[in-house]
Length: 567
Image 1 (cartoon, rainbow, N blue to C red):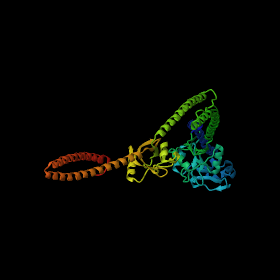
Image 2 (image 1 turned 60 degrees about the vertical axis):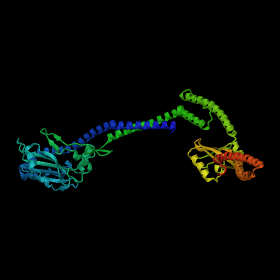
Image 3 (image 1 turned 180 degrees about the horizontal axis):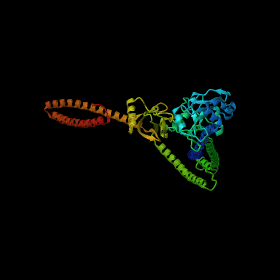
Image 4 (image 1 turned 180 degrees about the vertical axis):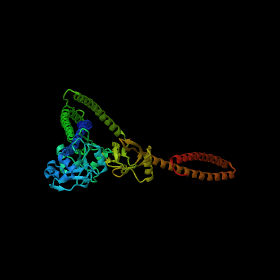
């Protein structure tokens, strides 16, 4: 990887790390702050929805308080026979105007005296649910009503929808606080009512029962966060004010919504994300822009010059042209480095010339020495451990003796010029070379014209520039072989002559003994002279026998050390 790519990589890694740190900082600090703010906002919005529901119930209670003080209501309760007198109050127009579904009048024992139900969608009467008919007959409701002068308000679970209910006691208006009956007003908490709540609270509102088996998972998760013992949702205080007690939990439903039960759009969160995204995009754009500018400036001022220096220096190294120079531009560290490189090239050029001159001289000395050897010298490859390697080098004497030119010899291998009929001797020669020993071997060289020259080969394995090779110096032993042959023939002739001389001694000594015997029988001076001269001859023969014994010892020495004949 060149320095330009490394620089770009470092800038990219730095930018990515900076973006990562910015993103982490945004998530931990900025988004954390926005999340805290949006949770507070969600709590306020959820409280607004709860207050809107409480306001609806309060409206029911306010109307119930107003009606509980009317004379017609008192008369209807004091005289049950006058219950029909309130029929004008229970007309359709009042239900439509108040948007109530039920207005009921009960006596003090909890029995319904008058009232009706009205369907606001169909605009006609509807039956009163049994739960409303007996609402004041239950022990809990009676206990509450007997202990309270302000009545009760709340939500009653009915079919098809829950009811918002307000019950107020009715007194006779003569200073007595004992109730003479009760007035009940109720409104369905249906889709239309929830829609009104949503419009009033400016929030999407959904109301579900705790016991609804079809509750979505987010509702179930929110219920699990509520207190195990719920408090009263809405109560009236002595000062005719309402107290709303609704447990509140905020759940994150996803990237787009929070649940405050009410689900609230995460506008603040998205504003934070948009802000963070803006800063990250700004950082990316500015980082890429400034990165490109930095790379361009670095490339113009440093990188391109370094790459030019590197490429030119690499080219000079490959071409081995130390006379070349690198152009110098500017006045900084790069130009100083270029000047240093040029100085180094100058020194290398001088060294190269000196070494080249010495190399040429060394090669000439080597060639002169190599070719001045009068014996044939060949160097052949021995990497395979046999004589099949090609000839690497040869001297002039090898070309002269073998009749091949140097180029022809370099195309051959040792088996082409060494006599191969002596398999045992040749194999032993190769084995000793494999063991790295110095070896001397007598064989014959085959010349180009096919004639054989007896040679004595002195061979040694050595390392030839990383290759295993053998240096073989061969000496022509033709003269020595001829002398040995002549010696052999002379020794054989001497031995033959000595054998003949030994037989001659035996032939002389036998007749001589006969002459001595005959002369001894003559008994005259002639006989004595014959015996005298015969003894002289015998003495000479004896000396010849002694000389033969000495010659036999010499002959034994020749047989032992020169192999002449067999005893």
